[in-house]
Length: 248
Length: 239
Image (cartoon, rainbow over all chains, first blue to last red; front, side, top):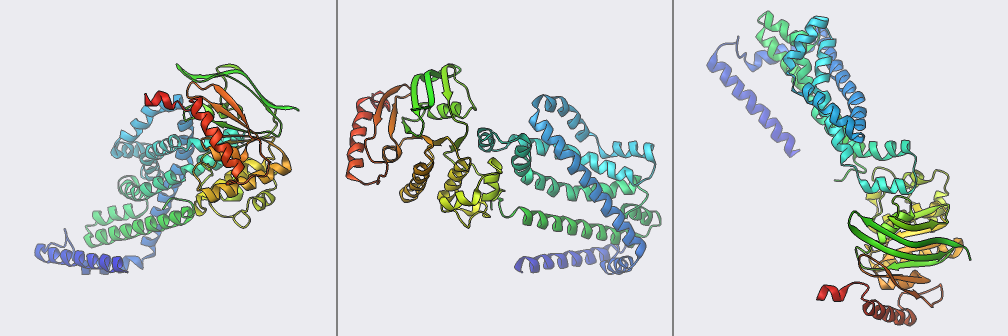
């Protein structure tokens, strides 16, 4: 409760500073006042087109995140188990990690033009290396005593992977989701802005095009609130799921 | 009597470090054997060779057991699996509830290891080994981290199972009293590279108490032997 009231005070102070800056600057084209922005926000929240755009951005985020988990974790597991394959793949993974988002943007624009696939692919590629490398380090940090126990009892390999490997990787999977979710929102919005044909990023682009600054700020607020909300909900869900056995 | 295990000139080295030096040992079925020796004497290496996860450098080791139960020094339970799931992990067809009841774990099947005390976790470690209905039960300093009452209680339950099933017990410990409490025969090892320096037959009833005068007398006798044979390399350390 104390934390909540402190957070609310922080937000109020921020809005107050924003109001003062807007008044002093008196240039609504750069900094619209919070009242105007909040009014626009209210209007946009009731607009089904904007809500549809928010939904389009959200599903792209979840699709990219899902792909990262579905492909990145098994790939990391495999590379963690096979050192030779890891040594071979590492340079490529590092290369993908080092490629700037802007280059991926150009590539997807050439391939698809403005599309929904572009933002998803860009978010996927920018998160995949981290997911693979985190999983590899999870495999390498596995409790050797548990593996030895399984060998002594001649437990089936499939069972070892399911019960020991995947269980040991859960904290690492949680870490991947923790880091990825916020990052995915930002990357998808940027990609929608520059190479998308739908979503909140595209709506921000349109608002900029029509110099609707208050709309731009209000859309940004919607994106921030949605991003924080999904991040928070996913984190709470994950913590709850792993609470029973995770060390406090 | 049938043998459960025969080691002949068994040696084990790790690159240039020799840990086991020409062990000759025969253990009969249903015998309770304790290996007593200092740290680093290769006791755990020997147990690993027995359980098939390591192999001898030279000599031979024959194990005549279909099923081997292993009680580790640490519980080695999967933290994200319940007690029941931990037991199912090693044996899907085992009589889990019966084993849990015998080891006073009834009602804890759905607990996670982190929700149990150290002693309870060690009971689950033992339950996992007994669930296999082993011919040979290996204990690797299985009780060393437990306080005396818990240690005594788990050992009592284990020996109760031995009375019924008569599996062979091969245990490793530093604790003389523990050794005397559970063994028919104690194998005394030297410090590294370890040799079998002596065998000590425990001439007591199979039902023993920790503080019986007979056991205490044997403890002092055993202590003399350990010092006399310098099994623990004490004279070497002091000078």
